[in-house]
Length: 349
Image (tube, rainbow, N blue to C red; front, side, top):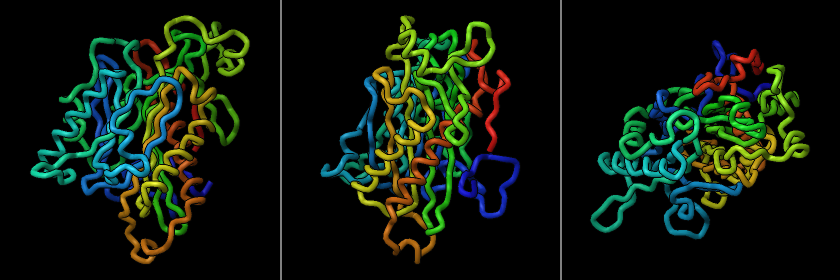
């Protein structure tokens, strides 16, 4: 398991001191967290700009400024990614990120103005405690003020504050989730990292062992139902969970990528979701993964070398899958829903 870097009590030789998204040079991460109302938002800042990509799947997405990131469109740099709770209302938080960036002189020149490019996606957390409180511009601005290049906090913070998983048996049998991150450094130079807020309809499987680590809780409280088996045998249930899901995240690297390559990285990172979330990309989810390439790889020799997209894509899948596992492993109970840690479950690193 030499390339898997969880946050443990002290790194082994060769491991990254910062095993989160901010291990990628040029990125900062900040959260706004409202535990009282079970919502929040997370911002990934790239003050000097990064080449961006995106891939949106599932039947119920909520996004902002995604078309700009796709190939052939004119703008090829992004300055921040906003991940938020609050469903469609939470997209307003990106306005606070735009304001923060403009105040700090960050954006693309457009005539007399600097226009920050902020893409974003939201998840549905309205039903956990208070559906009338959602992240807005002030909360997005506060997330920017909190952004640092240190290791990112995980669990029930930011966009993961109100996240839940395993909703095939109804909300009352679901599991508390959160936001997680993971990072690795490839032998040929680039660092690849991911951050994922996991609010999936499906359950969570540890793809390294095949073990179900979070599924709909059984009525007797003894373990989990198989989320796919439950769906196939009993149907999806009727408790208003049709739009109450979505997993959103960012995969990033310090390698130099074109926009087409960044979009490839975003696209293949969904394989990491599919490795760990069962079922994945359902009509009840709006799964969205962004990609950022800062080009800040520190080694000049490696910076001149062509990027091996096969290795980079494989790394993107791994860190995305590990970030999903981190999201459920680091979560704590909230709104009457337990986490896997409180149910006696644990993931070994």
